[in-house]
Length: 248
Image (tube, rainbow, N blue to C red; front, side, top):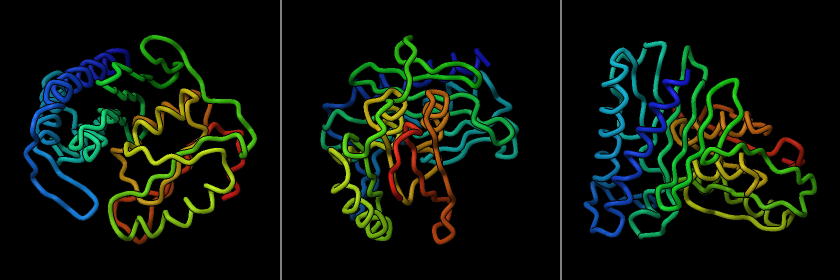
């Protein structure tokens, strides 16, 4: 799998370079929604990732936030969020990332998350220990909820906001701090390397959390991912260090 991991890291760095280069420039808005923004740079970045990966692996498929490429029945499917944290990016808040995972027969076997503004690259392949810029890491060992820092995502629609707000209100009284950072993939990476103790969201897409999922689990944490029956292609997720009792 090393060639898959190398390819994912290369694509993530190329995509991150494009995002970093354009960060301080005026952005073309493709769609402005109540709680979200769609930018042309999202599409450009996914096209760059698709070209980079599928040129090397033409028989593979790609499933991304900005559309699908190739035969989705392929045993190898890249799951991509080219710019996780688009609203942050548009407002020039330097907290966003590129997320790339590879699924083989439905199982995630490679995960890469790249923060181009901090030049931080989290990466892992199945059966190995994850690395951040080449150094191994693991989840935190904090077990007391009162000492925990957690992130609660509010997602992008009135429905998901209404679903997550009661959770946020309950958690904020139990933990040391709650955060809403605006990038699910970076939240997962932060749980994996111990900066956060947990990340919770009710209404997330697979491309947001696929790479983070394998990072958290290979770093010693736990991920509880459940499809939402009332929202197509959306999931509820609890990612944690595996020892803390969130009392959910």
